[in-house]
Length: 418
Image (cartoon, rainbow, N blue to C red; front, side, top):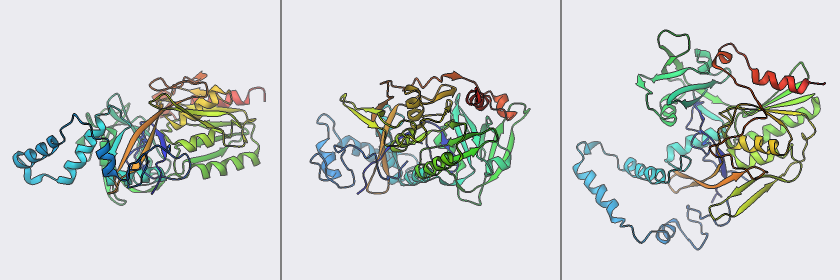
């Protein structure tokens, strides 16, 4: 039996093929790896026993509220099955899963969700960085599905999609009022198949339809670049399955190259595994608290540095924006509070909660918010975000002209007095 692993992700969706980092972990995971295990008092829903619950059936019985008549569920099911006008089209499995989605939705928390087996597998693929899709990040901005960034060399970029493009329709289906999850499900699909995306862009007089062939897309979550001016740029796009190993390799390269300064780019990073965020922040913070979980009963759990502080003496600028969420906010918040880096860019997303994914017996899963998290200074960033030390906007015009004033400001800061 696997131990639920804690995840923290925000609202961006990687259409690199998959369901979403928006599912908050995400988004933003499904798969459960090592470290940062859930607390000992968590009940396993796959038949293990904790808190005297020997099985999921026993758990359900022990937590059943006395003032609720559960026979009502059966009555509604029977009436729908008998009276619905298109009852020949009813799918019992979909009805059942839909009721579980409604149950989690009643929590009023966008990050607590039930995922059916297909969604669970897609979620797991997202965290592994392997997808079948077009290779672009999308988000809902002002109720409009929008391209955040096409990934380098991927089908979306090759077809001409650009950051800021508004998606008006997918295979002829209007995206008006559509959620990012729904858009992802329409865009993703098997490699070799095509998807038609209708877009509107600043400067267009009419919408344009792009036909894009889907491919298998493997995305590395960590990339490091060494610039001619002596600076290093470390880009972390998510905190997924491959992140810690790739980060370790990047740190070794940085130590060998001995750059004048380091730019840590966390822009549009929707989050990921809690343990990855702690381990990465630890390389700037050799000791002390990195982040704290706060539970519903007011109890606290501190996560201390588990690294060697190999980057603590390297002058660092951290780039963030409104797409930087959860795990990326843990890292940037810790470096900000402990003065280990200068935060540059725009206010972050503001996702200050932690989720645990519990695998269920049929391959579905439950992602549930289990705690809030606090920065080393004891601050919650929920719905507030992190305000950078140096605020620099990145306009649509900058996007279209391939300008990056945020990166330029970081370069200017790090090379000052060098």
